[in-house]
Length: 228
Image 1: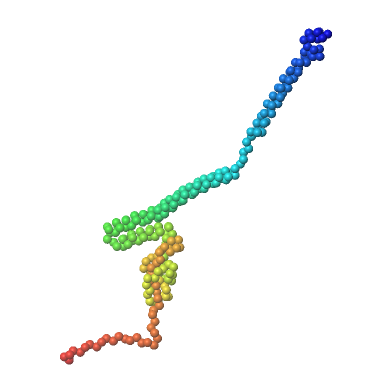
Image 2: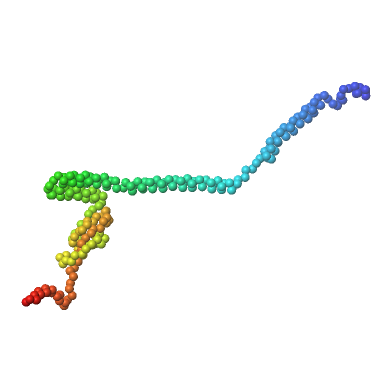
C-alpha cells in the first residue's frame, strides 16, 4: 500500500482542480490589492499634495491704492485739460466780445464819411449840419441797441449818483440844486451809469449881512493943476 501511495503522483486528498483555484485566488487577491492601492493612491496624492491659497490683505490694499491713485491721476489730467480749454475760450470771448457792436458802428462810420465828403463839396452850412445830425442820430440808435442811452439832465435835480458838478451858478430863478447846463453828456448802460454827466448846478444867491451898509465907491476928484 505504501509503495502504491508513493507511486501516486499526488495524494488522494488533493485534487488537481483545487490547486489552480487557489493560485488564481492568490493572483486575484494580489490584483485586488494592487487595484485597491491604485484607487487609494490618487486620493492620497490629492490629500497630501493640495495647496491652500491664503489671501493676503496687504496685497489687496496695495492694489486698491494703486487703482485709486491711477483714477486720481486721470481725473487731475482731465481737470487740467478742462481748465486750459475754459481759459482759452474765455480769452477768445473777451477778445471778440465787442465784435457785433463794432460791426454796427461801421455803418455809422460810413455815413460819417459820406457827410464829410458832402461837406467838402457843399457851401451850405445847413446841409452840413443836417448831415452830421443824421450821423449822430444813427450812432445813438446803435448805442441804444446795446442798452446805452444818453442822460436827460437839464432842468432836473442834481443827483451825485448820475451827475458830477463842475461848477455852481447863483440864481433865484430855479430851486437850488437844479442842473442849469450840461457840459458833457452822460450815458447809462442797462440802467447802470456808464459815464456821469458833467453839469453846472444852481445855487442860492449870497445874502448880505443885515444892518450893514455896502459902501458906494466914489470916484476921486480930479487933481488941480499947480498953475491954477
